[in-house]
Image (cartoon, rainbow, N blue to C red):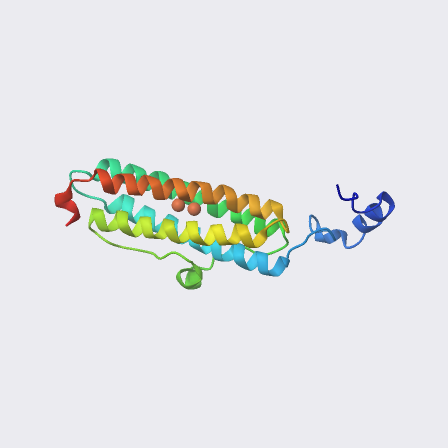
Length: 181
Ligand SMILES: [Fe+2]
Ligand SMILES: [Fe+2]
């Protein structure tokens, strides 16, 4: 087993340096500016996903719309919660959460969609979830053990995006084939 890292005297001394950095100490192993940038890209993604699901929720029509719309609404709420968690972490790290609507769609990984067809909506949402799953997986791997708190935020989001993708696949599979052609 490796020796415990820093002696108590040094730990105490280090903690007194640059105290306005708050939770960022000398033990922080990541590039904090880059982490904030990545968090902001994910924040843009979550906001765009919230808007897309809201749009789909309010415009879903047809005989199967009710069940599907309920799922869209639930996802919209969860994406909103994800956005809040990311914004909170950005502020903890000393950054500024970017809520600017002007640049939202270019900063987001996933895309907005205004399809009117129920199956198209589900497919577009599924694609967006798969984008989120792929990018959050990469982010978790990239963070490694350098910023475990941010990593845990992304791990929790990732688990829920995987659930979303699975929900949407389930909806697609249950819809009658006549709708899917
Ligand atoms: Fe999300
Ligand atoms: Fe999602």
